[in-house]
Image (cartoon, rainbow, N blue to C red; front, side):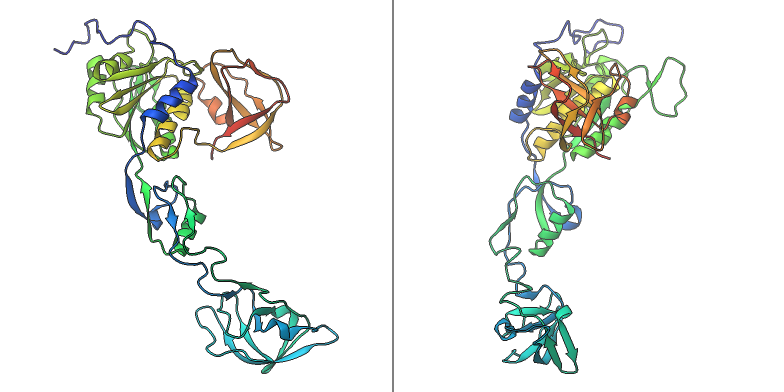
Length: 416
């Protein structure tokens, strides 16, 4: 029998289970969340996807010797001694263009006019740049000498046949797509983007623009979490705001068929914090309480093999725990190791930052052009605008009390 809203629910938690360290939670995610399925993905849709295979080139790139300059293909040895005071004259016997090769062979005293990207004619082994040539009718004079191979891009110089051009686990950038096209790969195997159910709980929450009284709070977490999920490489699947009722939250979690589930709100130990007990009831609650700031009420469980993340309702704490844990889970689904989905910069602190031994602290910072950083002067985990003023964050390990002024630290920079 499902208990009614006025009945004392046994899913309430009397306190946190054993509090985990930040590193312990990352290890759980690394060990228990496995890469998802791979699927064939066309190059047009492959940018920002993660490769699920090593790509071996079946061809050499380029596949022929080609000119790297506009000029004249010649036998280099015949230009020996050419200078401004001793120009050497050659007969121009034809032209070569990209996609239209010269069919003959360059013999002694002969040159073939070539354009950048054109195939090098037989009999030639160098290209004299057009800047050092004076052409007149079918004759050309050179005032420089060239060495064998000069201004020629050899077959296989970029990619040799059999080369691993891109390795499994690489997130594909536009230039990577270009390389894949150059080795004749119209499609690649990429990890499927995981779907992520986003469940937001709270009796006090309303949608933006919805009429409400003065005690209501506009939901921002679903928008922040959804945007972060997309940044990490996942696909957010949103639900309506859930009231703080155990049976409603239980039913919503049970109905999820996405690869991962994120619940924001109701993760602590208060009277209406039902989510941890529900996860424990339906599956396994492996984390409830983490020694981090902000975000200590974070929880993690597994239901039928599906990871369920319990994020605090406070906006900044929700963002921090999403960055730290949900992002890492999506990375695992994409065949990557746990980690932050932001570029890491080495920066110098302009003032000391302090923390407490025994917890990992996330500190929002402002980054200057000279790669110095300073801590933003904010307090509380509900000041969402502090994240818009921050350029990124640094992480203080739980084994130290902070960093003195002038320390070199790793800063994770938010993207645009």
